[in-house]
Structure formats: C-alpha cells, structure tokens
Image (cartoon, rainbow, N blue to C red; front, top):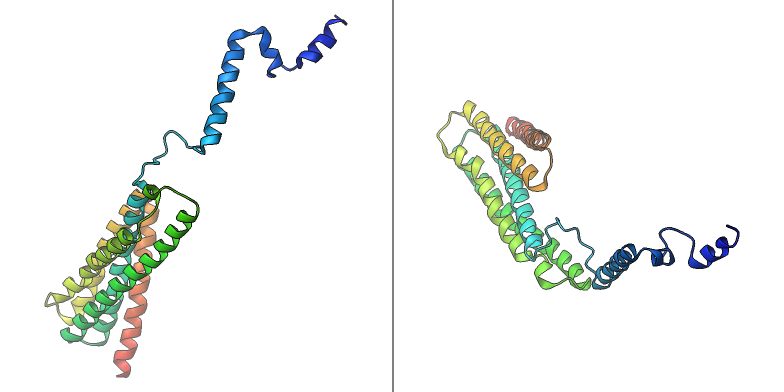
Length: 226
C-alpha cells in the first residue's frame, strides 16, 4: 500500500482529475468531450440558455410592445386628466374638447419624440457593444408604436366627452371609461412582462384615479376663482 501512494500522487490523485480518467476510457472520453464543448462555446461567445428567445427580431418586438403599452397608458391618463380638469371648471363643451384634442396631439408627439431619442441611445450602446444588426432595437418602431398607442388611449376620454352628457354626469362618465381602459392596459402590460396581472391592474387604476382626482380638484378651484 505504501508503494502505491506515490504512484497515485504522480497520476494526480483526485477522482475528477484528467489523470484519473486514464483507468476509465468511457469516462475519459466524456470528460474530454465536455471540456472541448465548453471551450468551443466560450470561444464563440454564445453563452445562451437554450430556452431563451434570442431570435433576431425578439428585442425589436419587445421594444415596440413596451412602447405601445406605455404609450396607451400615458394617453389615457394625461388626456383624461386634462378633460376632467377642464370639465370640472366649466360646463361648456368647446373648452373641454379643445383641451382634450390639444393634449392628445401634443402628448402623442412628445411621447414619440421621447421614445425615439431614448431608444436611439440604447441602439448606440448596442452598436458599441458590436451586437448584430438584427438584434439591435429600432427607434422608429418604438416611436411609431408610442405615437399610435398614445392616440388610441387618449381618444377614450375625448370620445366620451363628445357625448352630450349633463354637466353632473360628464366627469363620472369619463372617469368610468378611463378606469375600464386602465384595467385593459394594466392587464396587457402584465401579460407582456410576465408580471402579476392583479397587482399591475390595481397599480394602473390607482395611479390614473389619483391623477384625475388631482386635476379635478385643481379645475374646481380654478373654476370657483374665475
């Protein structure tokens, strides 16, 4: 036994060492294949999980989906805030619609421009990191998605305000339609991001309701002062 110890030490001793695989041809072949595969993957720079979606257009699709959902949500809340604020100050239809349309157009253009600038900066970073062109985000797609979604969302309170409601009913009607729309956008955003649907909906509705309550209060104060 004493004579065997130096021999084992010279062979490397451990069960997982390459030297120990000499006495096990099948294990040695598997070990060599594993090492070679790991080296090839490391050299190619493709440390990717097999079930992750690394297809060429996935980043771009996710980008415009995110921009679309956020644009719709912003269009609903910001336009509704303007319409409710003006409606709480006056019963005239023209100022309400003027504020709604002006806010809709200005907000949509602002969202599109901001999204383009933001995503362009992200694309510059991806180019600096030498990502393939098909894996880079597209700022125009994000801008178009944000613009269209903002308009679609902002039309909800504007179209409801077009209905000839009584002065007492216009604000509750707008608020109810906005809550329904926020439930939809909250559920869609949760589905897209894989988040909890109930939590996203509650957060969305709460934020929009607070915004409408604040603008309604400010409009009421201004209407009383004027």
